[in-house]
Amino acid sequence: MALDQPMTGDQTRIHDIGYRSYDGPRLGRSYATRSLYSQSLRGAYGLGRSAKSKVLPMLLFVVMCVPAAIMVAVAVATKAKELPVDYTRYAIVMQAVISLYVASQAPQSVSRDLRFKTVPLYFSRPIETADYVRAKFAALASAMFILTGAPLLVLYVGALLAKLDFTDQTKGFAQGLVSVALLSLLFAGIGLVIAAVTPRRGFGIAAVIAVLTISYGSVTTLQAIAHAQNSTDAIAWIGLFSPVTLIDGVQSAFLGAATNFPGGVGPSNGEGAVYVLVTLGLIAATYGLLIRRYRKVGL
Amino acid sequence: MYDPTVARLTYRALLGRRRALILGALPLLLIVIAVIVRGLAGADDQTAADLLGGLALATMVPIIGVIAGTGAIGPEIDDGSVVYLLSKPIKRPTIIFTKLIVAIAVTMVFSAVPTLIAGFVLNGNGQQIAVAYTVAALVASIAYAALFLLLGTVSRHAVVFGLVYALVWEALFGSLVEGARTLSVQQWSLAVAHEVTGGDFVVSDVSLTTATVLLTAVTVLATWYAGQKLRTLTLAGEE
View 1: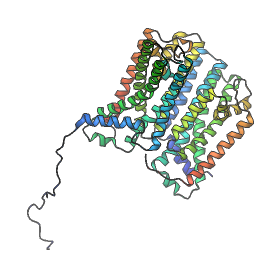
View 2 (view 1 turned 45 degrees about the horizontal axis):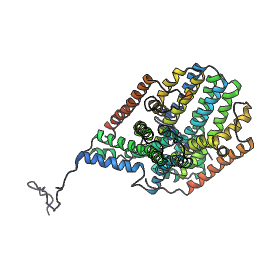
View 3 (view 1 turned 90 degrees about the vertical axis):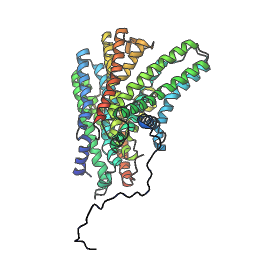
């Protein structure tokens, strides 16, 4: 062929090689959000992931439930008049386990998407920033609710089996569920905000646990000192500065719980209102921060 | 046994960019709390001992140790970039030893120094409390760094296991079960601190001999085994 002879006319064309276009149903934005939610929720317990990653969440779940089962067994065996621990108290007692769970699963949920740069892939689909954040937030909060609610269910069923007072137990159970729902939302929000900052999973875990335990440690230390100094007014205000004491304050003010604060003096109703406002404000703030974080991530 | 280049790389991995700020936030918080407590309660030996023992030694030192110990090697193994380091003609135990030195140094700087400052703020080193807890923090830094560095080479979930040890075993079981305290870095370091300063405010459930033997054994064995693990390291994909 003569190369020096210029091609004349437009030589490009599209061949139809027989690919069929998709004409099935388009499931759309809400379906994608729901899928992301269920995948993240399953992932939070290691379902659909390797056997190794099931170990820790399942172990923590068992550790949460076993003390409840033992208490129920003791209550049934000794024919006790009431359960050894209140429904509202249980999550406060087990807060170390809950902190470990949120610290290990929050980075699992968001850090890997950042590290492997899959976030832009999500956003190239119909879902938007808010959908992604809502799905992840809801999934982790649901996982936390399952973790904290299951032992309460064990306690409740056990209490009914032990023929304890039905109305009394149902009321306590309902109050416990409200308090762990608040706790789940708050912890999930804090965990996700911290985890979403770093693509390093290990660093995220350490940062979440540091925020949760150090804040709790310092608040209880300060409260103990305020108690020793007889400045009882300060105790309730100091409690505002850590997630666990925040939940403790809310439930002792409005959900009929006995408080863990030194001296056994929970916040009064006025202070309790501040507690509720701060809790809800924090949850909203973490949601807002997540939306802001994902508005520009990887794009 | 010590390779300056590896050390420089590890320092940058641990303290580079914003990480130094986050690591620095914890000690800063301790000092702020110390100032608040001093303002609220005045200088009191028991308060100072409670705060330094409960917050600084029991919570802050292990957490800094976990971040520095696992952070010295974990992320490199995680993202696979450790092969570039391993393919250089440097002995694997040398790499571990260098990283251990760096991890110990970082843990000491970020935990023992603020403990000392907080101790002086709280009661001006009355009854030698500040010095005692600083000694404990220094000793604990060495053992924690070695232990968590080993965890970093053994498991991909090193941070979680390190935290479970530090917070569940030492703090929770240690306060409930007497026997658990014998196997606790915190108690060993307290024994050493007690011997050094001899005050009544720093007490340990472990005798000095047991503590020193166990401290040395754990540090040496952990470092040796980490070197062995690095010699036979297999890189796995993300789960």
